[in-house]
Every structure is written in structure tokens, then in C-alpha cells.
Image (cartoon, rainbow, N blue to C red; front, side, top):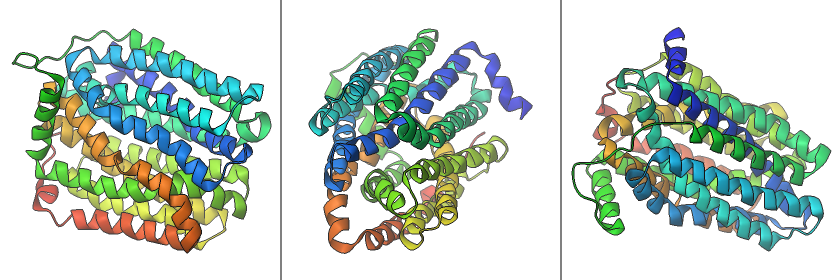
Length: 402
């Protein structure tokens, strides 16, 4: 543990961790607040899905450009600009809800702008960590950064339902606007050189192709991106649309915030395990643990008891965090530094490209077949696709170097 905390001696990593943690705090509050804002405005499950899908679609469309830019310009500058823009857009959403002049189309439109902001900085955020610490500290840095982010999200989800119930969704989203401003300041204080490759810059589409070639050079990489596509196609609507409705109806409004807090508590437990546990075949272990994500939608489908839902959410977070940590390390250790942002952008796009479709269709499909039935289908797809990915020799045999 002392060795892991020792990475905080690196100034640039400290500011990266602060910015990422503060951002995670605010971003944990907004999904809860936004869901209930749409419902308070009279929105249906389908309209809630469309609002969330507007963010996801804009993010997917823009992410590849964010990856190219993240390999062209200083990554901390990309993150700083994105945070400043998101602070403004979140302030507008908060003001509209507090002032009583908001509408579902307005939330969808500004949500799309927020998706663009997140997409421009997302690949840079993932690729920046290796620039802030020496190679021998990379595993500790990734583990600690993720642990701090997850801890902040636990806090955010824990208070989100209470903030919405006590003060309304507008004030809750206003907190997210403030966290973006603080994160932007932290990213401004990072001072690292830009990463450059050996060749001359090409046109943007040509550089995107380079990123795609790098992805398809690794079987384990494109295979698990495909698995993530299925995961988000089915799970996005289960959490973003059905979760708030099912849990609110069965237990109460604040319970959904607690369920998301349990999800993040599972992430934290996984992060604590990752601080010490560095298996030689980390991707194999992580992919096996990914099957635990089926527990959350399954729990919502079969039980109206809070403790069952909290347990399912915690197991989901535990399995996903063990996978995510080993996934990120696998990419960083096997992809050239000057292509990292582009590869991370293809990871995001490939993983989330079908999520808007899933969000948009979850409402009508679940209404037609029944909420519980659809949640069971979601759980089967998530667990089954994770185990199926283990049939690949490349996934099972990839070796982690630290």
C-alpha cells in the first residue's frame, strides 16, 4: 500500500488524480438527477431513454476525433478545455431546472453537447497516466487513480438521491458544473510534454486508420471491444432507463442512489484488490470476473428487497473493476505511446456505438415484454458474452508485465 501511495510524489500525477476524482464526484450525481428531472417533467421511459441516448450518440460520433487530437496536441490541454466547456453546459441545465424553464428537448440537446465535451477528452484522459509517472510506477498509478475516482463516485451516488429529494435535480446538477470547473483547474496545472511518433502528421482520417490497424493487430483487443459492444447495447438501458423506474417503484426514489452507491462500492473493493493483486494473466482473470456484471440486472428482476439489489450492484462493480484495471494495463503495455489515445478512442467507440440504440429501444421493448423479463435477458447476455470471450487463446494467454 505504501508503494502505491508513493506515486503521489509525482506532481503531475497528483493533479491528474485530483481532477479525475473531482470530476467523478460530480458525474455520479448527474445521472440520478437527470433521470428524475426527465420524470418530473412528465417524461416517459422512452423519452428518458432518448435523453440519455442523445449524450451517448454525440459521444460516440465525436470520440474518434478526440483520439486523433489526443495524439496530436497535449492531452492535458484537451482535458482542460473539455472541462471548461462542460462546466458551462451543466450550468445551463441547472439554471433551466431551477428557473422552471427546462424541457425534455432542451435536456436532450445540452446532453448532446456534454457528450461532445466528454468525447474530446476521454481518450486523452486514459492515455495521459503513463506520461505522469515512470514506467515502474504505472500499475500503481492506474490502480490508485481508479480507486480515487471510484471512491468519489461512491460518495456522489450516496448523496445523489438525497440531494434530488431535498433540493431538486437542478441544484444537484449545479454541483456537477462546479466539479468540472475545479477539474479544469487541476488539469491546467499538469505540465507534461506532448507525445509524438516518428513520422509526419497525416490527414485526420489517415491517422484514424492507423489507430484501427493497431486495434486489429491484437486479437484480444478487438474481440473484447466486440464483447463490450454487446454489454453496453443491453446494459445501458437497464441502468439508464429501467433501473430508476423499477427500483423507485419497488423501494423508493432514494434507493436508486443507494444502488448506484453499492455499484461503486464494488468498484472500490475491486480497486483495493487491484492494489495488491497483479496476476500474470490479468486479462484472463479480468474477463472471467466480468461475468459478475450480470448480477445487478438479475437482482433487479427477481427481487424487491433492497439488500438483494445492493448485493447484485456490488458484485457487478467488483467484477467490472477487476476487468477494467487489467484491460487498461493490457492496452498501455502493448500499444505504442503515440497511438494510445487513438486506440482508447476505438475502445470507447466500439464499446459504446450500440449504446444509444439500446437506450432508445429499452423503453418500448421492456414495456412490451415486461420489465423483469427484459432484465433477465440483459443479465444472460452480459454473463454469457463474458464467458464466451474466454474461449479465445489470445485473451487467456496475454501476459501482464507488471
